[in-house]
Image (cartoon, rainbow, N blue to C red; front, side, top):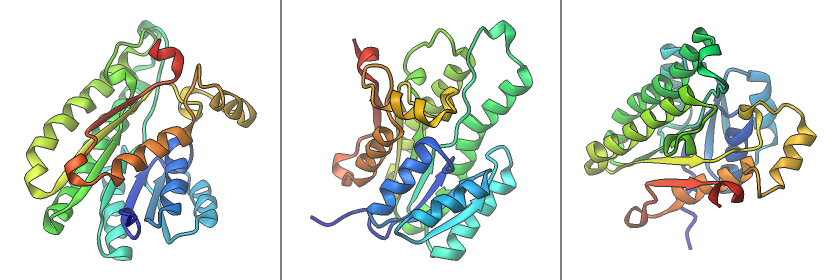
Length: 243
């Protein structure tokens, strides 16, 4: 069976850690060519150095439209095409909404909603010209259910699910797939974890957390499906959330 991802050019936002870094490693093993984008260039360069495939490092802040445009332009300059936009970058805020810092909420909404929309908008002309392309967005279980401790985050992910499901219908005739991957709680930095040993321990506990590798493998599964068997929306949760 032919590896459908070998040679494909994939842009990954939020690639410096967590799901993005895990996806980069998994896609590199599939033979994909990668653009690794995030704000932390040092982490991206370290990641690129361990990958067995050609990769481009781009510093990009998803709240800066010019960074998103440059990320896409540099990808085209380097690889000559763009097959997959994995809009993975995200920000999480939890707690009582009355105590939220609304400046922080504004940044979260810019990353989680505006950043995703701008990434999609930037690649659509390219994919339409090619007659093919995939846009995969990291959503969240919070986009399908109400999480008590994350009202603003949940609002951003509900918005993204609506965007994905609507845009899909607009661009299907152009040969473009638009998909969302909605994980439950993942043991990574997004959820406030910073200790590597704790992340490793929680990643192994299927009852409470998914690992970043779990989600990366699901992303690759979605991207590798043939058109007639597209997985449009995938929700995955640790065992305790499915009880």
